[in-house]
Image (tube, rainbow, N blue to C red; front, side, top):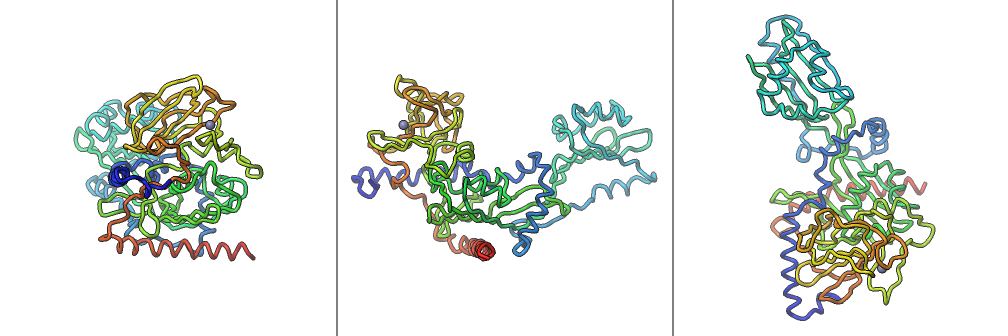
Length: 460
Ligand SMILES: [Zn+2]
């Protein structure tokens, strides 16, 4: 059944739903958050990456282009503070020491080791609010200390990560803190993968790490069911940024554009920041990739990484009288709210085991059965957001093994969640579509060119 055949009242609610969803899309950036996680990635201790980065860059060499100023202004830190301090201190040869935080270290241990006074430590920690951040230092982080006459600490630099340093400069009997941020150099890179056994294996072969694979899949999670629909022969192409500081790879930036071909059907997406500054992925014609409901309400990474594509899918896809879809998954696999809504029921029966019913607007209800447990704090009436964990896969109730039984109802009638037609989210407004297309065209062209080159290379 499509919404087009709904009686008039339902059509009205559908229209209402569209508006509602569009608003939510603007308000709730969390499910497509990966696009903004440069920093999170950088903080992750991916110290094994630099070697791989060289390979990656070499692979991508034909198309590797530095991104022009609009996306990533390539701007290197000027060491102005160092010069200023040097200029105002006539004493020759300041004692500058570089040291790394060791396991189990505290600032007081470091101060002792360096022969610095407890008094200076106290001043450092109490005279500038920025010093709060010095309370959580991690092994491996770099410190640069400038020690003056009488072992006075003149300057203290703490490299919080590859892109940010906190600098504290002595000024009489206090320290003045400053955040010094660097812009990484952003290099466009491209990867293509052909799926033979699993998405994750294909990605690894292509040189993408699992975090990037998840981000890629998240872009398409409204169109593609990554648990049940991935097939041998599916392929993906991804145009993304690699971040460098002083020529050293420090992490991945944004996915700029991507394509996923699933069972012969191509889906393309482009990252775009709209007039209101919100960033989402859009199809080439300007429709948000984000939709009202996820294709699969389970975190697929743990499932797809261990299923074997040579045999049939490990689901019990019995249709009627079974009125839902079963996702076989290890106990404890997170179950996600398929859409924004409210918890109508979080309870237990003999047949359902632990189960959750979510109400999404007036018309749509989703049900999740056989949970091992509920997410913490989940209770009747609570609001949930799309992609939020509501519970964990289990085998409670009448279940022969751990799986999620998922049902999707429109006006109380069971629908196949994988084929039901739902109202589409609002496209990019007409006033902005030219700007969007101008942004998208070169990215899509790069994506297509690189994929063709890859295919020619593969065919040789
Ligand atoms: Zn079932």
